[in-house]
Image (tube, rainbow, N blue to C red; front, side, top):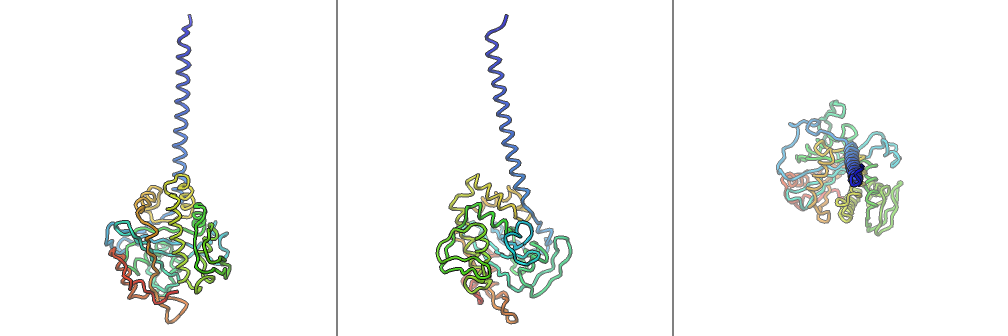
Length: 347
C-alpha cells in the first residue's frame, strides 16, 4: 500500500536538495569569480624589492614613523600597448614624470614635489634589472636614470639627493595612464590661455574641457604649445592634471562604487609597477584606505627649486639652498617654508 503522504514529503525534500544545490553552485561560482578577479588584478602588478635592489645600508633612515613618502613615476616606454600612443623615435624608456608625494603623520594636507626631468644630478652606483653594476656618474639628466638602470635606481637617486626615505614607489606607463582616465569617463581641466598644439601636441582654447585618456596623455606631455615651452612649464600642467584627476575620483566616489572601482583597478594595474610592499590588491587597498583623509583641494604642489645650468642653459641644476630647506621639511614632517619654494628657474 502506497503512502500518499510520503510522496509530497519526498517531493519537498527533492526540491529542497535541488534548491540547496543551486545555492551551493551560485556561492561557488561567486567565490570563483571573486578569486578570478583577485588573481587577474593581482597578476597585472609588477614589483621591485627596493631593499634588495638598493641595499638596506644604502638607504636613509626613517625619521617620522607614520609619515609616508611615495615616489610617483610616469614612464614614457614605447613598448607594447604604449607604441600606439606615442610615435616618437625613442628607444627604451625614461621617467617622463617624477613626483615625490609626502603624506604627513596626520594624513591631512599632502605635498607633491615635482622633479624636473632635465635636472642635472649625480647618479649613485646602482644595480640594473639584470644585477649588473651601473657606476656612479655626475651631471647626468634625471630622466636618464630610469632608462639606464630602472626604477630602483631612480628611488636610490632621489633618496641620495634628498636624504628622504622613500617608503613606496608607484610607476604607471602611457597605456595605464590612458586607461585610468577612460575608466573615470574623462577628467575636466580648465586653461586660462589657449594651448596651441605645437609639435603635434594638443590644441585647446582657453576655458574648461573634458579630456579622454588619449587627450589627457597629450595634455600632460605638452611642452612647446603652452607657456614658455620649457620642461619647467610642463610641470605646472602635470600638477594641475593630477589635482583634477584626484578631484574626479573623489567626486564620483569611485572607491565606494564596486563596478567603477573594478574598472579603475583593472585599468590602473595593467601597466603598474610598485615596490614589493604594495604589490597586491590587499596592500594597495589598505594603503588607499589609509589615505582617505587626504583632500586633493588642500594638496600643495611644489617644483623642486632649480637654477639654469651655467654651462648648458637648456638644463637645470638643483638650487641647493632652497632644496636643502625643502628636503629637511619633508624629512622631519614639517611645513615647507615659503623660502624653500622659491625656484630661481621658474619656467
